[in-house]
Image (cartoon, rainbow over all chains, first blue to last red; front, side, top):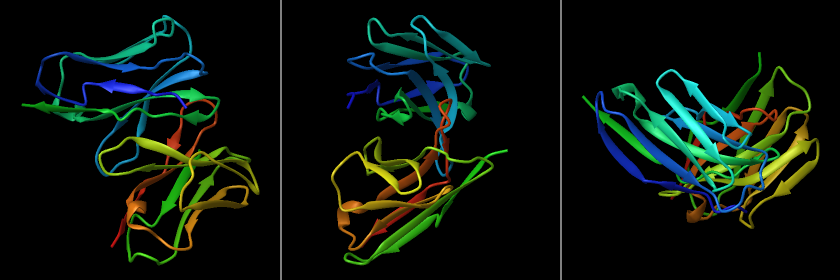
Length: 110
Length: 110
């Protein structure tokens, strides 16, 4: 079982500011690294699935990078909006089995 | 298109009572199915996964069990609930790309 850590646990961001947070993992013995966005009372929604060291993916104002050699992934939100408020989960995928971190809760205030 | 259904959405059960949560998937065959739980203040933890009818793997020792009676049906059960079984339960389908989640069940054991 991988010990996946996400930091910070929570953060407050002013609307329009950019932010980033970290997912770290002690071993890169997994198939892919997933990022999910989870809003209260909804199902987690996939943002990115990254498989290669150095992979960089972007969806609108949100992007992510993966460094399997040093054991971390960053997620960036550019120009945060109130609708970005959610918990962001990362999860290494060990051939179907996802090991989730505890998440980073992002609150964007107008 | 594929969809995943999970019910009930909320459940309040007394200690010692039985539990049955059901998850069904539409639009695919032989899906890999997963049960996750989020206990209070913690991240999503993988409980069980199944790669086919009658095939169940347990990730952590616990008071719960799972069954796969049909190809697209995955059931989470308990004979006698404990207070520590309270949490948010999510069924997921992972076709080896991104995972798709049900709407979740909020279980409160009282």
